[in-house]
Image (cartoon, rainbow, N blue to C red; front, side, top):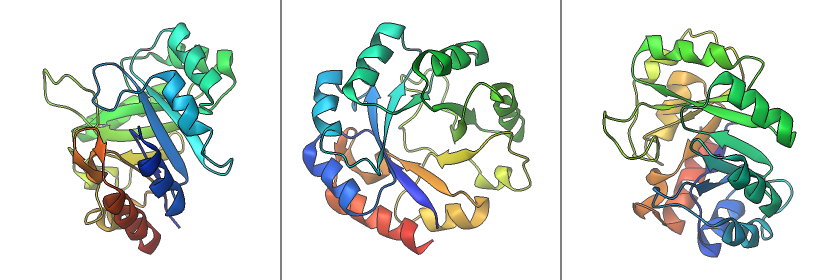
Amino acid sequence: MPTAKICGLTTEASLDAAIAHGASHVGFVFFPRSPRDIDPDRAAALIARTPPRVAKVGVFVDPDDALLTRAVAAGVDTIQLHGSETPERVAAVRARYALPVWRAVAVRTREDLGAAAKYRGAADLILYDAKPPRGADLPGGLGLRFDWRLLQGHVHPLPWALSGGLDAASVGEAVQVTGATLLDVSSGVELSPGVKDVDKIAAFLQSVARS
């Protein structure tokens, strides 16, 4: 059965909805330019509400070690890197913190999928996300999707997850087309950028459970 990560959580209500409806992962964004940015101290309070069975993923864009250290101290148990981090940087983060590290790979064409192979041995999981438009302020969380058919027949170098343009209406198709077993959503469960909707969270997770 597919599982899901609800990303960009900032409130008790949205976190509680994600947990109550079966999210396997919850995500906290540590990136000041994002409307979902959260301070590590605030994240610590939310993480304290999260049961051990639910993974707590910190999402970062080219972070320095000081920010990573604060987030890990807050309780993050998985690190997602969503910037321009090299395989060497990914491996160094993984070694320093001894935590699973995910690396996002931006996809628009089949050739973009090849970037995932560079992280074999450095990352634990590849997150395929839609490549943002040129000049976009954010590397993800824009509600964009790529052509999921690109993943058909692709030999994945690592365990992987799917992100980008997912919502309750589309996640079943995403699973059917790609075979994804972990789905990552942020904007698809929001009323507006950074404002999560508990009913949309519930509907999304119910759709994942039916997929």
